[in-house]
Length: 217
Image (cartoon, rainbow, N blue to C red):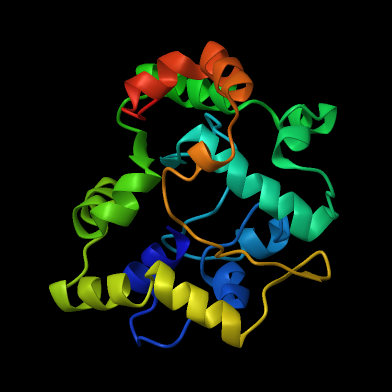
């Protein structure tokens, strides 16, 4: 999403944007300093993992929580050297410290009820499978216009294949470790990792949200 927005809104000269350029265009409140963010003039987009009423508009990106957990498992292995299996990770007490997927999504849905014009909820799967229309919806929500030529270029140069190629040519370093950040990007990976016990546990917590966003069981 960050690459798509950068390449369609900010990157008018069509220069090559790498992972290490992200903070320059769309800074993260978790990585950039408040001073650096406050110095951005004019229209700006900021990355956050939170839903807060202080934000004037929110683009909320949701992914099937089961696939998100698989992705986070490999991130933990790369960055924090988690040595266990996926099952051990799923039931590991440290996993809960990041907050549960269902509670995070419910917070966004509650926010949407009270602030329907201030948030757009985008499924990651739609961003992958119908990139053009999904991106257009986001740009319209943000009040940003771009040309068809710029839009097509942005989509082409923000594809997962291109990002994987970029990663192979320029290492992505997080906390001083090389990270396979663009690992697969596919949806519906979770059946290869979830046991019946895990699936029942997850559905007990988040089955209503899975159904609401049409994530198959």
